[in-house]
Image 1 (cartoon, helix red, strand yellow):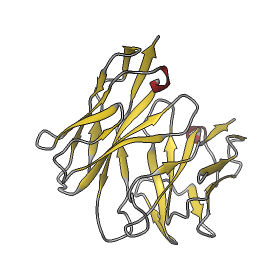
Image 2 (cartoon, one colour):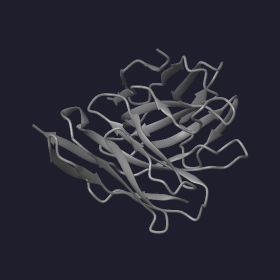
Image 3 (tube, rainbow over the protein chains, first blue to last red):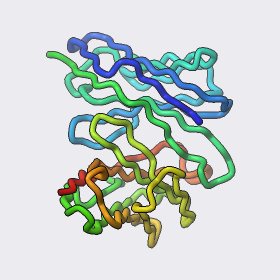
Image 4 (cartoon, each protein chain N blue to C red):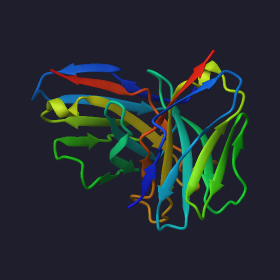
Length: 119
Length: 117
């Protein structure tokens, strides 16, 4: 079974500053994806960024980037130029990739980090 | 815009009274999921449909059932809700290999917040 650990229950950052959210995971799988999802207050969860485990290059999406350290099983999210709209709960998630069909797509979430962007 | 829709957004039911939550999608995705998210906790997968194939998580209580009459709709039935079932219920969808450009990514609906009185 996989586990995902987010050690920072809450964080805050000043608007326009940079913040890094931590995530570690434990798995014996070699083929998997890692995700960061954002859940704003009272709004739906949306995907922020995805990383394939077989790729060494860190994923980036505009102001969001990850630091993927496969050997250390670490997957942190960096938010640059923080904006008020970044205020949300952020979930790190793991997905094992299996090609047999049923059961292939289970997301295992961490407990989340509540990020507040301060004006 | 293609999306995942959940109705109702808020549902109040009485202890022991059956309740059904619905999810519909216009994404034409093959896979649909139901998650339970209790306050300040991570979403927990209850079950998912891979096309018409139903996949139940081992620790999902028998009190929770699901139906998927067609590709677009999926229902979550709670046969006898208890106070511990009060939570946000999230529906999500995803493609499968060969269907779309970005498989495995899950698209979430806004959720239904269930209150049990």
